[in-house]
Image (tube, helix red, strand yellow):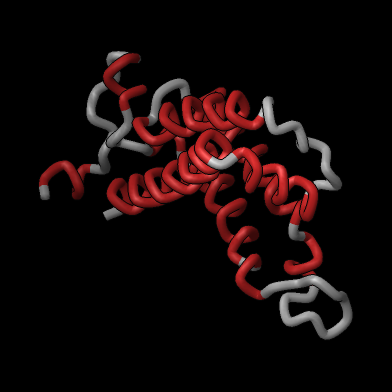
Length: 148
């Protein structure tokens, strides 16, 4: 159960980052709007958005299959921390009781960032990742899971 749960977390986080990357590639104007709204326009260069999106999709693709996790998982965390910082008001005041421009729907950004930390913390216990095959490691499942 643990191996499947960690896999589900890895896949769901990677797919989220892939979707963000695809958005930058297919709709750079939308990505610029997001940058203007949440990131002070720091990445508001329409010509740069598709490149950023492609890099993001590539990194998330590696995360999806569990390759080069020692490098890729912290990169995925940084991408998600960037998102979290962009919506910090919604984390502190999800219903907008004190701050304007918040939205309770952004609160899960905190959960996604925590999930990224879990993936980093449990890298040595993951079973269904290509790093296991690449490193030539034996099945790392717990004895109870290996028998099931």
